[in-house]
Image 1 (cartoon, one colour):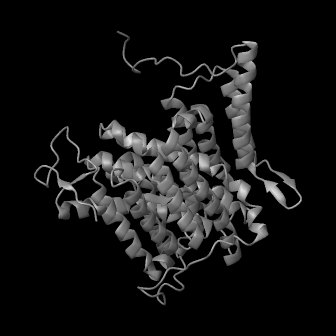
Image 2: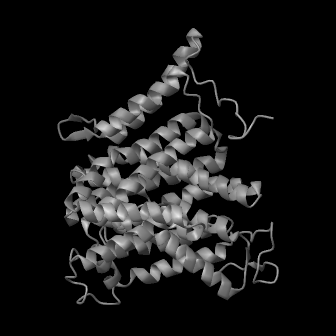
Image 3: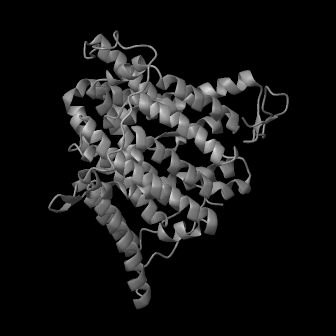
Length: 446
């Protein structure tokens, strides 16, 4: 177990100071902050297996194990929680026509795609550690990165609608609660609005007799998670793998963004040197989860919010959180309770959640001041978005490429080939880089 230096008096953080990754507060305070991280990650982490049909307890187990593995491989210098990745929702549910997986065979087939993505991400991490991250920026510039992240969210819109229509009143209550919590509360409560919205929707569902409690009473408080092995010897499973490959680009963007965010907030540029290790760690955690039945992992923005609110970036708190997730995984009753969440609640919360994935992509454009007056940037986004929202697909016999794969390929080809042609012809249609900053909005110009 690593040893952390005590920050200050171990109880408080002075104004303008932060608790650095290699520091900690006293253990009671560290456990309290770790508990906040549990709440922050929980709302999103349990939703992924509910939506995909993966076992909840198994997902929690490998989420906790993945977090501890991440801390070890990044040498305890990079605070992060590895929760369930929403980027995998589309390819996983595509195996069952956009719905949650229903059979063990479907789960084991989906796990092959998870494992392949994990191995590929780890390999990219080793490459980044050796040569640096600059090549990623060139291959996946902001307009392309934002497009890929956003199209994954928007491609999931029909799945949200399908659940919404099953219990529209309950879905509406849940969605309204999510939005209200996000605007009524500041700080930590505002950041967990999705989690709170699910609680409100579930309570309303109980009072309106829309929850089935079958199996909850019989479920044991303590027991082993439900493991599944990836069907790597099943030829049919490999036909789904191409749908998963674009997710690698999303995980790269999320991990790189996480590292840069922590480096900025702690005012420690040396943290950026751990980018390759972060990719390797998330790749190995995803591979491990996929090999035995858990959802793929990624760094969590929800927990970044907790760190920003508390100014505590100590990795000690994440050891507490990872350990708590592992303990929760060994309670079958917890898993059965989560599986009782009705489709209307899921429809309401995913309406917001999938849209937020799209907004993250758009935020990448805003943060990097993408110039949408340039035709190459316009068509990179326009074509990839219509492919994703329209659910385009191409098939050759049993082999099929879904909308996410086609949208990703379209974004990459249009951007890189379009730029090459425009620059060769000097038409001015190429990506000219970020547009000039316009200064602060509002008020009179100085």
